[in-house]
Length: 187
Picture 1 (cartoon, rainbow, N blue to C red):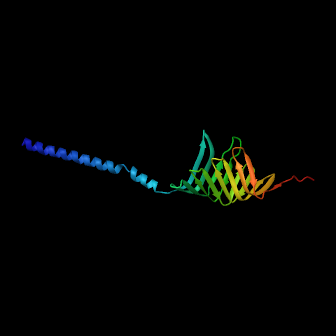
Picture 2: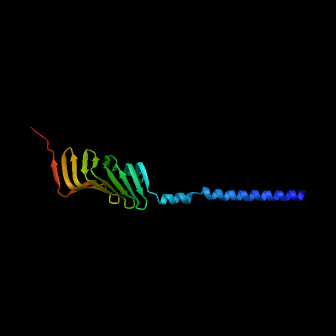
Picture 3: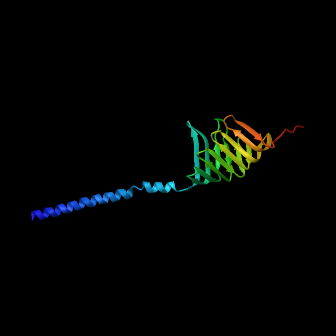
């Protein structure tokens, strides 16, 4: 009887070992979902509500983007926005430039942001209105295009294009430029 009992015990132990090995292989195969998740992310465009992107370096923010809703198109490295607001941070002590519009987009590979229509930018006491804005990160320039109106307590200027050079704090107006300087009314 002992040899039969030993044979049965050996068969049961082998069956348990085989069953445990098969269970481990099945668990390992199905628990590692990285390839399937990766395939989903590679083929998926993402929509994000209340997006916030911050750009900077060397411990300093250069600009910050907020949008009510955004759409990321992975293959184009392109983000489209609804109700974007971009804040450009300049030197310490200088007020930031806050730009708003109804729509916009950001091309990550090129570092170019575009906002349209009815763009409104505020910088200290100055407000800029235009139909379109383009920010080129590499050149550190903000370009306002189409029916540009610049309002300041001391003057009002209109043009077709206005470029703010962030590095040297310069504003350049081109295309049918008109500047009205508000004089003080003296008796």
